Length: 201
Ligand code: SAH
Image (cartoon, rainbow, N blue to C red; front, side):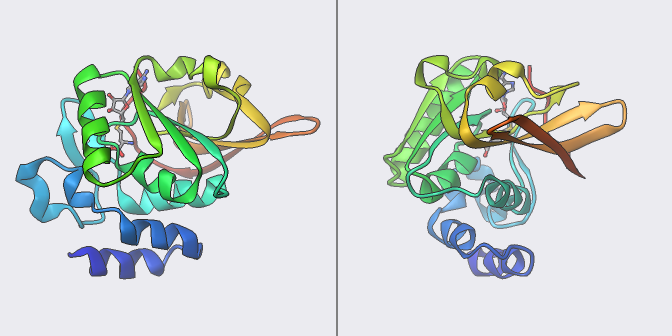
């Protein structure tokens, strides 16, 4: 599949026009390993290192839709990996901070984002489960690695009023996407469809 093919396939499932436009402007081939460039526009996760994958475009699109991003939003991206998901978020929001545990990967993501001409994303290496309290609160938080039992409390605490968080969470019932919103009367959590991500370490 090429970029046009991927866009057609996403358009059949994604109704948010801004999300589709973001996919049209980010070159995914820059974010995969050079040996995998030919597969860059498959709607599939691809390996980017040990225990690490670049997420499936359809899943990235779904998570972006759930976050209902506005052009001025400040966003935290946990498990930045290749930087691709952060790049899509950056087209929909004002400013993105990415946090990635693997230092080499964090450096590579920062370089790739610059090569892609993206200047509103900063990537740091560290434990994303702790978030970035010094930069909180965030209007939206995107988590791309599976937490066990519950969304890490530190991340929920860093949500601004009206803020949205989406994260894969594993419980005894399996692994699913959880959407959290900070409303006036507190947090509201909603478990959505089943997903598969690498584990949050
Ligand atoms: N969003 C990425 C996909 C990431 S795969 C992309 O678009 O390419 C999940 C990533 O989470 C891996 O890179 C892994 O190293 C990272 N990770 C796992 N545990 C983490 C933690 N505690 N803090 C930050 N990153 C973590």
